[in-house]
Amino acid sequence: MEPRTHYLNADYGIRSWLLTVDHKRIALLYLASITLMFFLGGVFALLIRLELLTPAGDLVTADTYNKLFTMHGIVMIFFFLVPSIPAVLGNFLIPIMIGARDLAFPRLNLLSWYIYVVGALFTLFAMVTGGVDTGWTFYTPFSTTASNTNVIPTALGVFITGFSSILTGLNFIVTIHRMRAPGLTWFRLPLFIWAHYATSIIMILGTPVIAITVLLVGIERAFHLGIFDPALGGDPILFQHLFWFYSHPAVYIMILPGMGVISELIACFSRKRVFGYGFVAISSLAIALLGFLVWAHHMFVTGMSVYAALIFSFLSFAVAIPSAVKVFNWTATLYKGSVSFEAPMLYALGFIGLFTIGGLTGLFLASIGVDVHVTDTYFVVAHFHYIMVGGAIMAYLGGLHFWWPKISGRLYPETLAKIAAVILFIGFNLTFFPQFVLGYLGMPRRYYAYPAEFQVLNVMSTAGASILGIGYLLPMLYFLWSLRYGAIATANPWQAVGLEWQTPSPPPTENFATTPVVTHEAYDYESFAFEAAQEVPVV
Image (tube, rainbow, N blue to C red; front, side):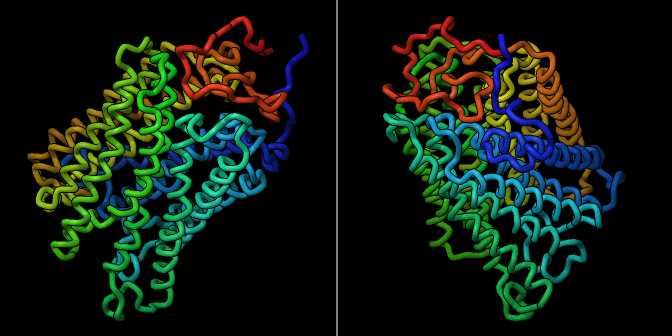
């Protein structure tokens, strides 16, 4: 049989990759870049945990520690968590899932990746030439007046990368509106598409605010204009309002695409329609909308009127409702489903558990009285890691495992993948659950030394981080192994529904030989007839 031409072997050479406008190849460019940044952020995290293994600050100096947690936060948030699922899985899957040949603006898509790389290079330059110590929040007036580290190059890197996010969101929205296959109505769309549509709205509306805010920090620092510096007539509280107006919705940029992934995994490995499809779809838009109205709960101790605090507290509770709708509906989907426990499903179940803990502890922080007690303690660190790391990365890895046969045309070792998922779940909980207790007991975040009574919990946390590191490293290794030695994947190894499974693995450059016509709703597992014999053989 003649070797089949697909997007990976359609053209060869570095030039063909660096100048490609194929959304699938651009997704792989993002995958390589983002994985490098994830590895870098992970090294910073392990150094932080090693420093906190003992009460005394005996591994690095206080200044170095400040730079470590700052660079860990900036790399992980702006260069991994925010772009990971949209830029990698979204780029690869959105056109295929809606039956299109590519995104609406292919060249703009390639430009987005180059902008991401330029932003990352600015930030890496800041790191290797001394680092930055402001924390990822860039709080003024410290960042504009007191810090003597590389604030401007770092802020510039974040500013530039913001354009990548905006252009990606714009591209997704236009593509979903204009390029759906015949018959693919809004309420036949996969929930993965709904989640990315909602995420794109936040990207377009929220990202310009953070971009302008960090630009103002740079201008303030360079020219002393008195925007945020109270000594010059500025207002540092204004900075916090602007910063959190984006940075709280940014949490949903990280988690909403993950929720879309989980909906796909739960439906496939339960062999059922997603319970309450319409509610789950609309809840994505509700989260995107409400996410813009809760920023000030990060500022309960900064100073605001009691009435304003009450309103933001109420709104913060309200955003939990659409999030809970998703969790309840996934659970209802599992009920009486034909559940199987392949590696992607283990990641999905891990996501539900960790996200639920993260979400419920978020209600503690929405309560003004409790928030005052635990603000700037390790309770907050544990909470947002349960959401943004436990939730978003579990979903990202679950999605990578699920669609890896489609992306690479190869199968990964399933048993090893299940072991990695279990290691990751255990390591994560051992790392971050003790931090809830540390925070409740009063250990502040960002300190490089601490009283001896906190050491046992910190040792547990550091041990967990080591296990977690192994859990993250394993998939990188066996994915690379599978590229050469993995078994050849069929077009639909999971017997899943969805347009992406109707094209060969890996897909041809044009995605489909002919434009598909959609005649059924999403996740129609009950009536969908699977005929493995009809799968397209792959050479």
